Length: 358
Image 1 (cartoon, rainbow, N blue to C red):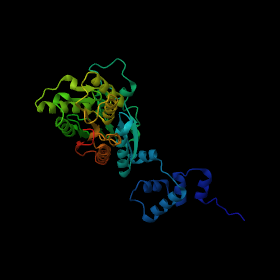
Image 2: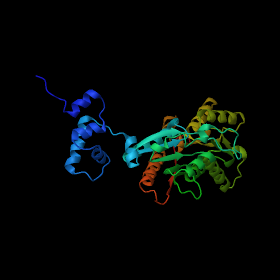
Image 3: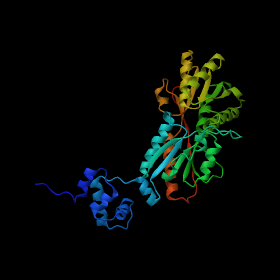
Image 4: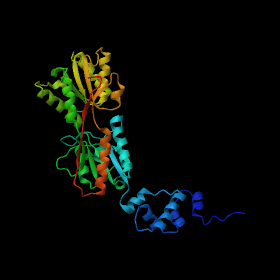
C-alpha cells in the first residue's frame, strides 16, 4: 500500500530542489507576506502563526534570499571592507577581526581591494580604470555600508567617497572637516618610544629610519616623528637618516647591504617601517657578520607574529591591528543604524615592545 504524499509540501520540496518562500507559505498555510514578516522580525504576526512559519522554514531547510530581503527592508545585512592589499599578516589580522565584528553585529562582510597610487597634481591623461571607477566597480546597491582603508593620497578615491550617500567609515585617513567616521592609528607615541630607546645606547647620528613608500601616511608620520625626536635630543638629523622604499623583506636587505658597503651599518640603530623590513635588515646584517643587537640594534613596526619567530626575537612597535578592524565595523554598524549620529574619530595608540634585537 502506497501513501499519498501530494499534500505534503516538504515531500514536494525534497523532490523538486531548494525550498522557496512559496513552499514555506504553503507548508505553514499562510501568505508569502506573512512568511516575509516573520523572516524580517516584524512584530505584526501572531506568536502561534510565527512559530508555525519558523517550523516550516526549519523543516524545509529554507534559506532566505538576502538580495530579495534587501529590496523589501532596504537592508541587505551586507557590509563592505576595501583595503589596499590582502597580502601579509598586517591585512589578514585586520580582516579577521573585521569579519568577526561584522558577524557579531549580524552582518556578512564582503572584502575588496583597490589601487592607492597617489594622484598627481595634474591628472594623468588616461587614469587607471580601477582608480577612476573605485566606487562604480563595487556592488554598492547590495551594501548597507562600507569601511575603506586609505594609506596614500588619492584624489579620485576621496572624491568618490565624499560624493556617495552610502554610510562609510574611513580607516587610516584623517580629513579636516569630514563628516565621515574615522579610525586612526596614533603613530607618534610608539615611534617616539622606539627612538628614545635607541638613543639610550646609540649616537643620534647613527640612527636610521627605513620605511615603506614616502607617500604612505604611516611611513611619513613615523619618519617625521623619529627625526623630530632626534632633533629634540640636541642633534641635527641628516637627510640620509630617513630612507624610503616598500614594505618588503627585500627592501630591508637592500638597504642594509648599501649601509654596510658605506660603512654605516655597524654600531647603528634602525627603526624599520614594518616587521618585514626589519627582518630583511637582520638577515643582511647576519650575512655581513654583524651581530644583532651587540653591533646593530633593530626595531620593527606592527608587532606581527613574525616579530616572535625571528632569532633573536624582534623588538617592535605594537599596532592594534585587530582593534582597527573591530572598531571600523562597530562604527559602521552604528552609522547604519543611526545615520544622523555625530561623526566619531577613534585614535588607537601604539607602544614599544622591547625584545632581543634592541
